[in-house]
Length: 234
Image 1: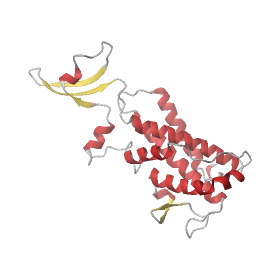
Image 2: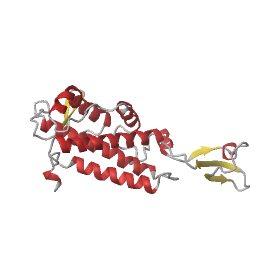
Image 3: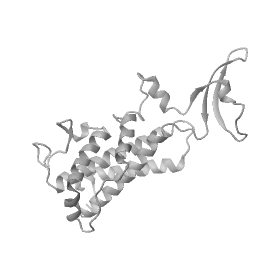
Image 4: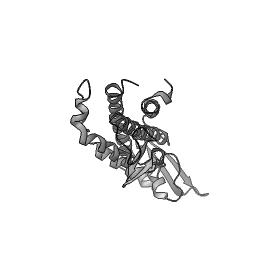
């Protein structure tokens, strides 16, 4: 059905499409040597943002919960530090998650009782920590999309290539099967100037990517449960 006919105005369907795109890229290139991890992480992060927004909308509409002084069936809003903001103005996973969690935790029994299959609505262990990791790396949904320009350290952290000394390139006790990819710059006399190295399997932000994948999976499952149990599949 067209997005405007969906119970959640289409947020969940688009979230699923971003998640599937992320999984496809991840499968095709699970160990990227250059910067392929950035579009992968952006797609997962955007799926997390959209799943949270979808599920917030579903819960407000189904439970008839107003957005502050605005009606439950009006334009969706997010509570941010006591202020209600239009949903399209909020991109922080932490803020969205706190709103989402505030709708579920006080109503665990109510939600279970109103569903056909009596699903367990308890938020899984680890979710709080995943959100902390995601928000610490990318609070504004810009980390994977742009060079930061003003923060060289951030751009170094997202790059798989790191500055390396000759000793780091060729350590004495390295394994015979050790493989590296490196750019080595020499001067006109053939003397070492600097090098940038990427060891195979040294993808940056592994903890961040793991948190994104876990959070996207959890919210995908919540979204399915809500659509089956609360919105008759629509």
